[in-house]
Image 1 (cartoon, rainbow, N blue to C red):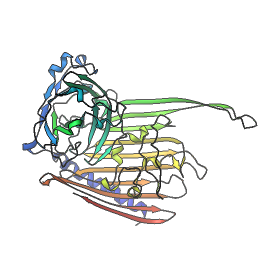
Image 2: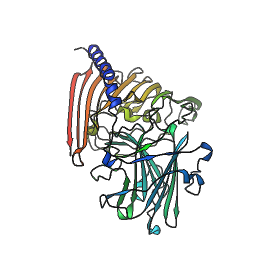
Image 3: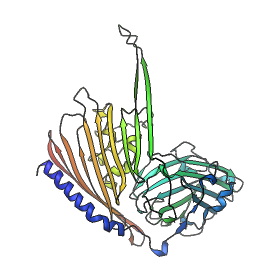
Image 4: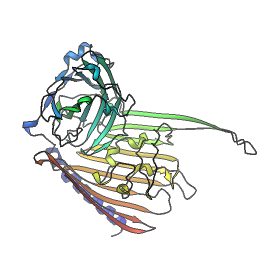
Length: 477
């Protein structure tokens, strides 16, 4: 079958799949069994009452907050009461979701305070984690970690298996050491996360780590077989409604000036130049974001950690550019078959889409002229569509590089999806890839032990080397 016919057939099949699947998806929202359900109704306050996020819990408004203190140990003594008391308070106004944590400690002088850097190793000291699942998917979530030191980190959690730690968003957190432990305050703007409009029930897990005891306590399932960021058996926050995301528009313009002087050139090579461009993010709906970039400048992106490559395969360094990080989880394919360790090059060798390849040709940087993306959640599906136009290079003209990815939750904890990519960064060949994957997960059948299986099939079409197939299967228990 020719590529155009294959793409048309795939598009038709996906359209039928989407239309037929929507009613079932609406009825099949993930739920928890009643014997393990934890539910908290979140208190609402007025914006004028909002607390100051300074690590001081003396604001009177905290007395109105919903209180959670029925936590259990996850380890080392599974299901036992914690050795130290923890009190979590939750409330919201139309702009932000607020959390406070009072982490009591009978030996406050032994609280481990480490890693103050953003996205540093906050977990090496005492800390707490907030894992929020706004769509109640029991699969995907936002993870926020705050250390007793005040250090903080954030990540995207995909299908309870993959963490995208390079993701960052706007939120506030402050902590203080107090005579009987330590306290923290957090404010997460609704405009900083994607959520389903009208969805009043959100999945939620709270976890605290007392590092010197290696004690982890949670509100949510304490099953030690599950990762501490797992939301499949988490609690539920109810009553979140009528929130405000403003215009839903975020514009990031820039102007950059560059000066050079080449003393070795006959005409001294002196020159002053200026460039301008920027990014724009628009919330089409609270869960669906359109992104536009024009002549982007990535000089503010974090530097890559230096790696020594001792293999014949390329390193897969994590994405750090804001345009590509927006809803990056929407483009993940193959589950655990494609590991995110940059040193594990072989397991990534068949990855159909890796955004770091956009803007590189044979190891040399290439300017991006413009790009657009639509990503997020719509109608019970995770969607991602991306097109980027690159500048011309010494080996060829500018190229339009595109990718489309869609996944749908199936069964209780699994996902089914497909991906289509088109384009060759060098422009020397015509190349397209079509693939499908199934990520199976079950933490209920075997009494709490988790079964994970990943399966993918993809076919590439290249004018240079012909067509090829790739199949991957993994099973973890």
